[in-house]
Image (cartoon, rainbow, N blue to C red; front, side, top):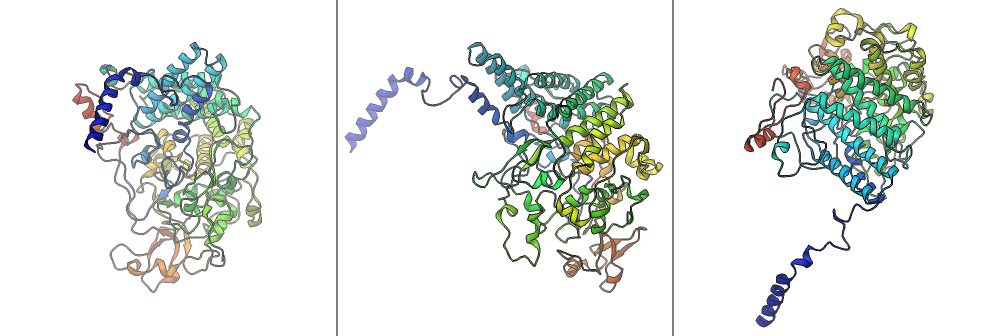
Length: 640
């Protein structure tokens, strides 16, 4: 045995001593950077890695990064029991990450954008170099090169847009940096105006060069235009509502691209509002022609998620939708509830609201208060009509896997026409108000807001008596008291005195509720004060409830709600409702008849105070120290 071991050792030593040249030879059966870049199929495979990062949909399994509802619950639409989640109060040690995969980071919810990470920037800059080499070596035609270079620049532009949305100024790189280029690796942040002007160029190139059709659910020219409209609208309006952050010239330039990009999609004739609202989010396969890019899931391929589960009526919701959001939905005559002519417009019973409000209200919320929601207002937007029936006591079948746990298979409309037209109409109105653009016309409203309102209704909604909302008329814009009253205008509307812009913003709120848009919108509009419960008291209230009635479907479990310390014991934890006149009624154990009003979530407290510094995320101490250790300095954001 000892001789055998010795022989093996000697043979190994001889092999290792003489195999230096052999080990340096490229492998014939494995791909590496020296032999990978030889055909278009390999480029597509490389680019496909970016899809889960930028088009996360419902994520997978228990993942919640960027997902609707679970990953988008930090805004003025949602409220939890107890104390509300606060903004960052101090510079964190770590708000960056080193992985390429989308990840769940607490503060990510606060910005709705990106952590500090330049791995994807390097990825796309590297790909641009490889594409140049492939073209020089004859592996790509001019058309193939232009297309993939366009996709690469689109993704780079998106990556930088998200970084800027979070941090403002960031270091800009248009090529990979070697590990010996210390001055480049640790350079200070470039102005956001410089970065986003480069992004503008990337988007223009992408729209001009990406194929009109590259296959189902792959990036095409129209998807690129839709994404450009998203990020250019954000940046153009940021400059307007955050004075000093950018120039009027750039604001106009970016908003103009949002309009021209929207024109490309709208005038293509490829997309239309032919699908009811609920089906957009609950269907297993892409429904209709409204969706530009759809993320599909499959039980057979083990690509499943958990988000439908949180809409199945049984799973708890906290944070949950609040009264401020419920009141924001217009009545189906197109007017706010305060001056609507619809019968019962001032009745906040959920069944009544389902038939008196815009149809998206009925499609978004359950028709009765539910104890499984922290506010009793339950969101069922992200599940199909069938999925909610298994929570009723009279249904004997067990809930199918697609409606529970992390085995959901409904797909998500990552990019849809509604976003394009609302980006488009908002950019047009901002240009008209502030940058010399043409006035919005009735035809513009008919192609955007009114086209959305004319979506078909499904049979379920029709059977309940839901009707479409009246069109928005330029000559008869609603006179919303929340906009026109001086107190609320100063507190809630700020400089938004224009009635059309107000209605465009309301339309966005109804259309994109829980889809990760709201925090981005209120940040770019300079409206973070909407998240202060002291000045926006409806933020701290739930739905209307009458604990003396029996609701259809899942009844309010009043006995459960009043159990234990929810009876008034002077500790602030009593079950409470607020009357329309502001009177607070706490349950004492004997006043059940008076428990009618807007529900007060258990132990509700406003979030900690926040300031204008919270519009941008701070550079974390890890990054600051990393710079310092190498003898460099990185500039911190104002106020931090």
